[in-house]
Image (spheres, one colour):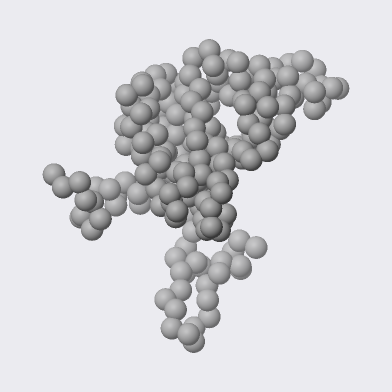
Length: 210
């Protein structure tokens, strides 16, 4: 099989992309990916468009007891931010991190480069999507979340992040309890696609999404 996939016809892949959907983290069960599978998932996450080869991302994988440690950090942050709340509220906030057996934090870290930073940010978004697709391709459900603690200084410090780091997302990965069913409404091509000729009005989606 050729190593060059550009232009290779793959109807199964197209069908997969046209029907892709997220699973809910709180529905996920063990097992999550093993070490070999996780290596494949992260390798796919790094195989994205990256102008200048800056690799503006890195990954934190949380499994087993590591998830519990992060849960405790989140619980502490919630208690600090909401001193009037009952301890149960803080505990519940931390427990949300335990929904899935595996969580991958995709971290955007701006690199020194002559290219626009916006291009690095887009590369990180592509990395998150590739990570999800790779997890799905191995039979796992995945959900891209951020939640408030992605932006909390106490949590960020507890994870070893600094001022250059931005949490692009916490990707929750696990085994779905059953076949995912249902579908949410998706954008209309008529709202967002224009075959530009210089004369037609551009469909920007304003009437639907603003």
